[in-house]
Length: 68
Image 1: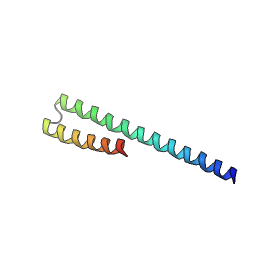
Image 2: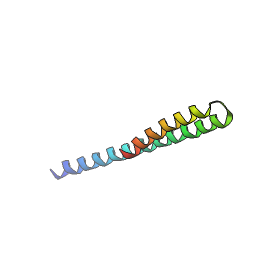
Image 3: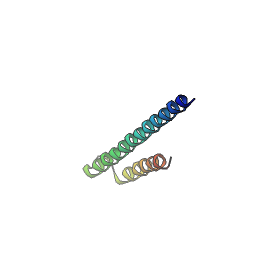
Image 4: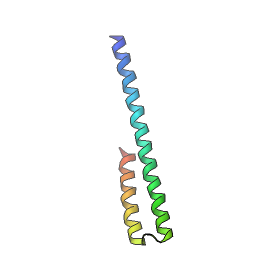
């Protein structure tokens, strides 16, 4: 019984660490997209309206991710 509980605890910790890593990777991906978006705007590839619309979308998704 003790061995089973120990393995369950180890598995739970591994799952928690995997979820944490996935969240960090997603967060980096969103931040990278924000930088690319800003660069595209500064280069004139996209206009201000498009920039702000996409920025709000990305920030909204990032906020959802962090609050979960």
